[in-house]
Length: 393
Ligand SMILES: Cc1ncc(COP(=O)(O)O)c(C=O)c1O
Image (cartoon, rainbow, N blue to C red; front, side, top):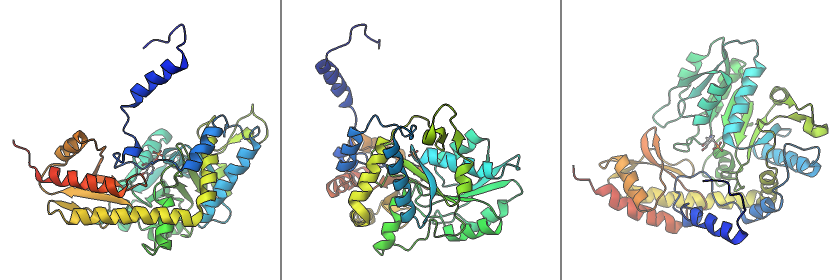
């Protein structure tokens, strides 16, 4: 591909683009069945498209956007039981987790060989963060429900430990680690604790409201020092927007850098990115204001109804098995006879966009708002055929 000397007219460009985009499998088809993003809320998409030039890395210029970012942080703090949150929006769970681990390292600067303890079900962004930050990541065991085991965490605490991480809504199964018990260990040992609620943050509070769970996973738990939560997952916001909240100002301060050439509010940045879109943050504000708790609760209720449907469809098929009783809108499906790779290949041929998890080896179904009842039924009709057809050698 070359950069043409003479530009093409708009119609030709649009036609070329559209013909390439036809290859994308969009959420509207319901076929991406293992994605943690979804079709953004219509109002959010509108706000996003009208504010694309606003730069959240220039909050001195975009003062209104700065106020709105702060209000998003406060609303999310309210959701997560933190009255006075200190935090930043980010590009998503990966950036938030990197910043949380940076805060751990920097708040214990005297430790020259920093170690972070995390159950082996943590998202790969934790490994990435450890790699970037030069932190030794100690992975600990899990129980038969795929939740963090407590004893191995206690046993691995050393003079080099700068933090402990747990997940509220694991990527593989949507499981919630025993946050309260881990929080106690963090307090006893005076170690920061980060909860990765990138996915679960916009789900668990509403599961609790709906009587579909009773999980303390956020700042309600005393030992928790930071939480990451992604509006661009179950918050229904357009990509990219994550959020990282700290309980104490000190932790935000240690990840804040001066940008000497910029004035006022722009002269300090807590995010890794410099120039970054404010549009998705503004869209988050609009969606949160518009939906309120009632709107999110309804969305979670609908996703859980379809998760229940999926659970029943698995239980009806003797050749499939659920890895765990679903905790949130994620199903881990094990195949008893046909190898997983074969199932994935056959399902992909039928247009589904699949993902597998290693722990345990299973298909991963994320019942996002775009995965309609029709899509669920079509998926399980195909899965029934594929899971019972043992390939010839
Ligand atoms: C639990 C968890 N944390 C972090 C991430 C990373 O989020 P992002 O892809 O927005 O960087 C994910 C992504 O799926 C996740 O499931």
